[in-house]
Amino acid sequence: MIELSIEQRQQLTDYYLGLLTEAEAAEIQKLLAESGQARNFLQRIERALEPLKFLPEPQAPDCLLPMTLARVRSVAALESQPAAKRFTLTPQERASGLAGPRLLRFPELITIAASIALVVGLLVPAVRQWRQISLRQNCAQQQASIGLGMRNYATANNSKLPYIPEKVGKEWMQLGGVGPKQTDTSNLYILVKLGYAKPGVFICPAVPHSPEALQYSTGDRDDFPAESLVSYSYQNMFGLYRPSLDSPPGFAILADRNPLLMLGPHPSVATQFLRWTSPNHGSDRGQNVLRLDWSVNWSKTAQVGFKGDNIWQPADFADGQKQFLGQEVPANSEDSFLGP
Image 1: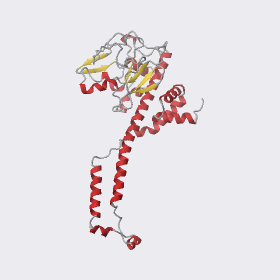
Image 2 (image 1 turned 30 degrees about the horizontal axis):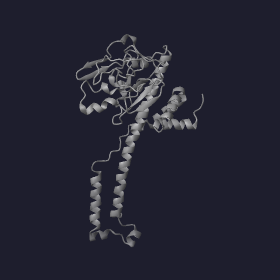
Image 3 (image 1 turned 120 degrees about the vertical axis):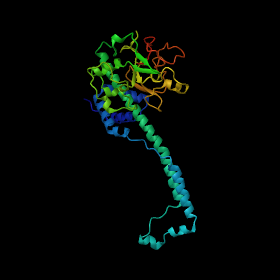
Image 4 (image 1 turned 90 degrees about the vertical axis):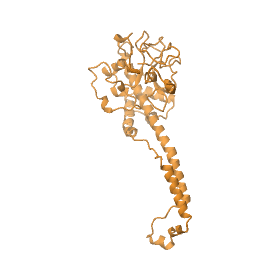
């Protein structure tokens, strides 16, 4: 086994922290797909930094600024009074060491107040951004792991990607109440059932979940026990056109959850802007997208199909249609439709 070089270890660390360019990240993803040692090294980094994901973001209290200004004003008023001279230490008092602590003067308090405001203004957004980047990178790593499972499965099954033939041609979504209640994720579950991927990698790390929910038996079922246990959208495999290892390498095969599945049949005007980016990453609008060259890229638009088409809907989706009926399928062999 070839040992990782110092440069490769540094690049793997930078990859985890989200510091690489897209081209550099693609090279590292290829390394991860080919080298078990690289994957183990990345897992050690993840385990070492795992506790940081659960630290609460530092939040400055709303009263911080008023309290600071009130303190500054009170000391300023104190220094303007003659009685404040009593707090000025004589040389004898300084030498004796018996005097109390010196009161901060007005210019010093102004400096401290400005420093506090600066630290709060810079640190809180920086920590929040770091966490978003970290979660985004963890999500990309999980999708790359799913991609590796897909490739291994396809290699053992005549280049065919996971799907259940018995369900082809059937509705892939059950509707009820005001919106979609259940989508078919059994095609992805094949990877779990046959041991090509672990259950935990199907939950985007940016989506809150309970670790206990991952402790379920995998051999006696044909699908995930709950919709919350899979937060990625896989290529719709219910029609005539199903991608395989022979499909174009740029074909988008998996991404963060399709937003159209979450908005219900009658999305309000206020939520229309949510239609084109996944809800998985919250305010960090966008989604990771896995392609058949096994690269994972972050995108802030849905127009990232093989020929620039919208990955959230079929190429022939009717104009103005804002809901799924559960019967839509890819329009052609080059149509990425990450729906179920």
